[in-house]
Image (cartoon, rainbow, N blue to C red; front, side):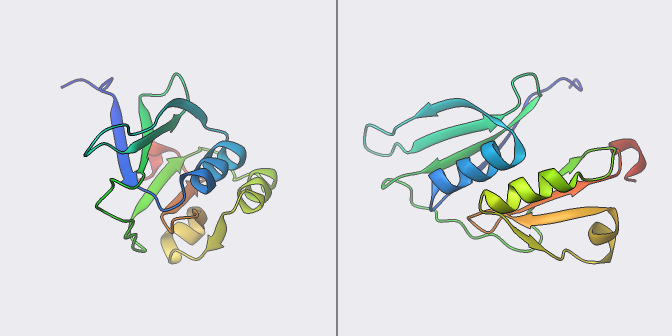
Length: 133
C-alpha cells in the first residue's frame, strides 16, 4: 500500500440536497460527480470533496436505496485543520443547515462538532494530524 491511496467515504442520505448545501455552501467542498440512478438496483450518487484531495465523500440516495441513514454520536468525519476553527466557517456551516453539538471533552477541547442534515457528525479539529495521537 502507499500513502497516496484514494479514500471514499460512502453513506446514505434522506435529503441529498440539504447535505450538498451543508458540505458545499457550508464547508466549501466541490461537487466532483453527480448521477441519477436509472435502473433497477441503482441509486442516486453525489460525490463531494476538494479536487486535489485523496479522499471524497459519496452520498447515495433515491427510491432504490434500501439502507437509510442511521448515524450515531460516534460516526465522525474529522478534518484536522492545524489551525483554530474560523468563526466565519462556523457561521457558514450553521447557515447551511448544520447544528453545532457537543462531542465530549476531547473533541470539544480540540475543535467544533456539527451534525449535518442527516445527523452524521463533522468534527473540525484545530489540531494537526501529526499532533492528534
